[in-house]
Length: 209
Image 1: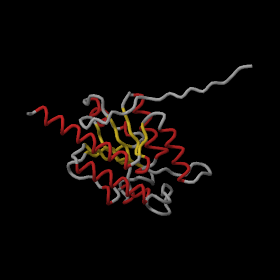
Image 2: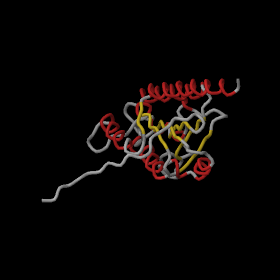
Image 3: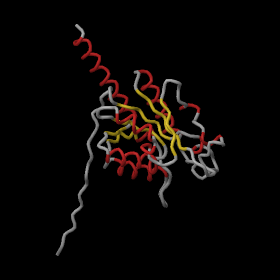
Image 4: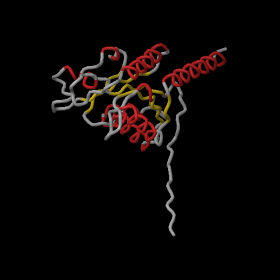
């Protein structure tokens, strides 16, 4: 009798170094909030609120921030329509990076890949839409490059998969992403950032005495 064995591979976990961490906000676009559109999500308010909290905290402590959006040549995510635009609350500021691409993974943007290649041990902290598409694709691509990634699950949302609800689909997506990355809540991520900032400030105080 042959027994089946399943192996689960866990990729490298995060270190949350403020010098190499990049806060990534993926596809917070009107396409996902416009009722009646094919990509519209049913309930994204809590995820949006948490993502805004994450963004505000990252800005407050001076973190590197990058915004991504999809631009396509079909009827969805088309630059000629308002639906490709940023959600008002999460619009990039002039001092924040913006990258655009057509494919799901943010690694499909060559300029972003070049940017990461200049960073020692980059760490991506990801909030975005949608979990089962762009966020999962990004997590897999990051793992193949041996990059650390943290997926902030309650600052992201997923579309319904099959007969599952959006909530249940997102729970399953988070479990899959956790094979390639750390998965944390907004509260956990903000606490981690705050602790890391305090440690670095203490280190600097000792260094420059």
